Image (cartoon, rainbow, N blue to C red; front, side):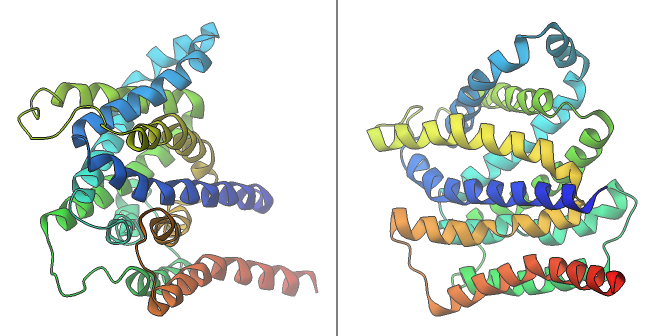
Length: 300
């Protein structure tokens, strides 16, 4: 793989983390008004409707949808669980805390690498992960004396299932390509699973639809913009780097979640949090400085 191609792919994944970061406070706005199952359903329904014209115009794309349906179902089930567990967690914990726990993928992805990829991270990955993990703790102060709660457990489960999704997507996309097809399939499957569980969960004292204009706007962003954009970016570009480097880039997400949480919900930022954000940025660029240094030595 060309270094320049991987660099462009990883820049695209940085853009993905910006979009993801905004989803944390936006999701908190929506779950305050509507049921989590309903949120996942309408979010994935909107995304499916946006992608539908692009995958059914060509006859070849329609055939691919049926051909790759089993693989798309696996991806869709994993990402459905991730979104659902995250929504459950955000009912009771802050955007920052959720962002930190979601990005425990930086731990789970390397642990799962020998199982899914038959490979091990190198020392640069481990150094970057250590810096980033410390940075996330400082940035979000996730355990501030309140202990582990139900929302924390849901979000840790989100991190585990999303780590499995990262590895599964990596293997499928490297072998088959077809990022647009798999993006549509996984969102459609997610929509079907969510629709199945809405009636079962209806006993909760929550609305199926939002009750305010702000929540409707937030729901539109989550479905038509965030889910479509991030699914396409991840499906198209993650396979052009390694799972470990992708998970490292994804931990920029808490930094943007903190920033947008402060802007939208007035969630505060401390000096310690800012320093943690700096450590995360340092961790992400660490591997690039090493690459540039090696290249200069080699050229000289």
